[in-house]
Image (cartoon, rainbow, N blue to C red; front, side):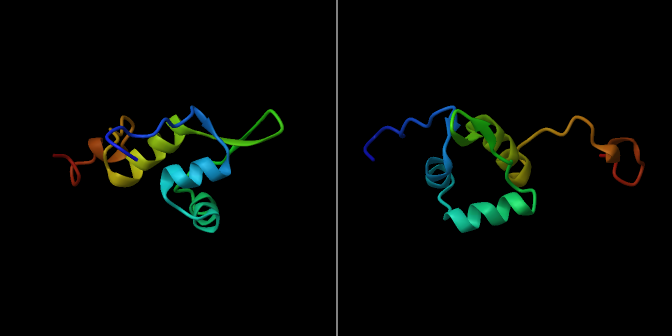
Length: 80
C-alpha cells in the first residue's frame, strides 16, 4: 500500500465497502442486519454505501461520536 492510504470513493459498491471495512460480504451483511452498519442506497444500476455514513456508524460503535441527544444527560444517576 505504500506510504499513502488508498483513495476511498464517496459512494462505494459492496466489494469496495467490504475492503474499506476489512470484512467479508457475509460479515458486512450481518453487521447491517443488526444495525451496526448502514443500509445501501440505489445509485445508478446498483447499490452503494456512503463512506461518510459508514464512518458515522463506526464512530458510534467505537464511542468516538458525540451524542447530542443522550437521554442520560438529564438523569441524575447518569450525570457526570
